Amino acid sequence: MLNVRYRNILSLCVILLFTLFVLLQTTKLDYFNSQIMPIVICSILTVLSVIAIIMEIRKIKLCAGRSDEQSISLSQSLLYLLPLPALCALVWVTGFYGGIFLFVSAYNRMAGGSWKEALAVGAIMSVLIWLIFSVALQVDLTSGLILEHFNN
View (cartoon, rainbow, N blue to C red):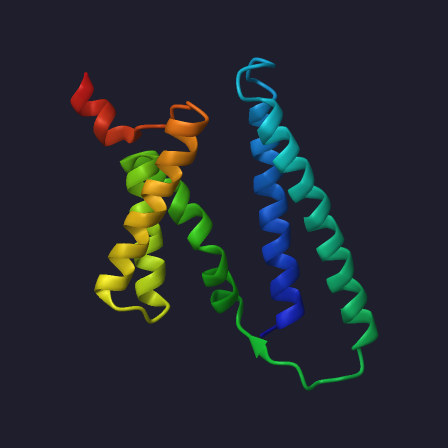
């Protein structure tokens, strides 16, 4: 059984590793071709993740004698990490807009929302992402394997 604090540390370490991987991949881009923003975001996320890990470790040391915290199994802890690779897989297969739509809709439905609410929120998020990136910033996001297959 894992303590909630250990689950938090495990989750933060996975986020930190993912962020460092994205930061490494970002360095392969051209300097003015969308490299600055991902480096800034990944740097901020790296610093915040390290600070959060340090705070969780300090809480473990402060609460070492107490046993009133909720414990969960390792498999339950890993379920908390599942949405991140699921989102990446959805974006890779269906494209950014389709992946965001499916992910937000499924997440909202699993959180207790109705089907109408889940689909509406997913559609709104996809439209907002499209407005921000395609219209305002004029950045093309990945179209995914499905659209690439049909375009070729």
